[in-house]
Length: 90
Image (cartoon, rainbow, N blue to C red):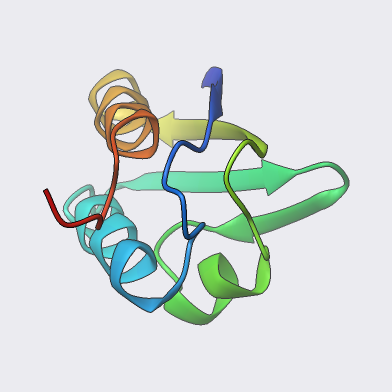
């Protein structure tokens, strides 16, 4: 199992567009279980409803963990997205 903490930088938090981007990225890793947690709440990173129910706002520390064949790549991909300005217009 691979696990990393990351701070959400998007100024709007994980609203619909960035949540959809995150779920799309997570869904690429079909043989890998990927979870995201905030405090005591843990969700499936491949579930749009789950990601949106986290209520993650800018500055929230999230833990991304994965287990499976592509766990290293899956965690890196999601952490890189969360650490970017995910979904923000440039």
